[in-house]
Image (tube, rainbow, N blue to C red):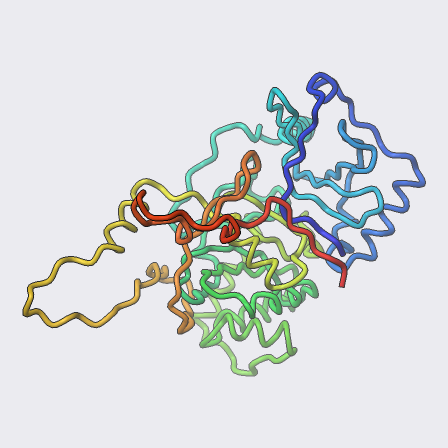
Length: 383
């Protein structure tokens, strides 16, 4: 399937965009579009949850997709179903965010909280961003507190990704294959279960001495440990699984899994084409650094002066954030670090902070061809 992971579309006629009323496409176009999505490797499961396909104000070759239930997410799709756009559409010259207007309209029609309302603060630094309009048990997949997740730190672990997954999810297998090639990220996996069989499998995985490895082995190779979990661990694991189900709700369907949640609040059910593309998604969707973070980075990068007769201290790596008591923390040996920047749909993507020039102003600037910024549009060709 062809996809664009980042796009900012500019509609040149503000008045037309503001007054535009969405309408369904012709029946033959809609049937062809749905057929193409059903044949897509990463979109087949999504088709069942599409609520409506509608026109957009700037093109007759692109359509808006909205979803059923308590979900006001919007995607855009090309007329032939060959491209999916995860983006905000901005009208020029008055910067009307057409996508935000449509999300607010959908939220109002479904009785959801306005997405412009203040978002509740996360309970801890490890917790994912709260999802505006999300209510416990409303059927929406959203990452709960990380105390309910299996935590795995790979490399320096400075990037973050929250995943709603399940032991009996076929597309979750594809995601695990992609994750295998990614480093320098902390993963939080929530196991969603829907019946007694999947619950018992998830308990066995959670109580394994290496839960993330046990989940990978089961998803990728169908391997399962026959060791019986001890009673105390099984009870605690069952309680976490129950809390995840209660937070999500009985109307949630596991066919929507996996769901990826990023630090900047972005959420997607569409999988990347491969590990390299997923790695770019993770980088682009990291949260912005605070002033405190920048100050700390500056302090860490400047070594303290040592006496002339002092023996140089051995190099040390920055330690990963301490895991919570109930989270599992697995770290790779890779100690390379990567400072990342947020994704802002109203601006071109910015390069990771580690790539920004740190030399004095008098230093000769880099050659024009040496810029490592990610492109504003990334295109994946069909395999």
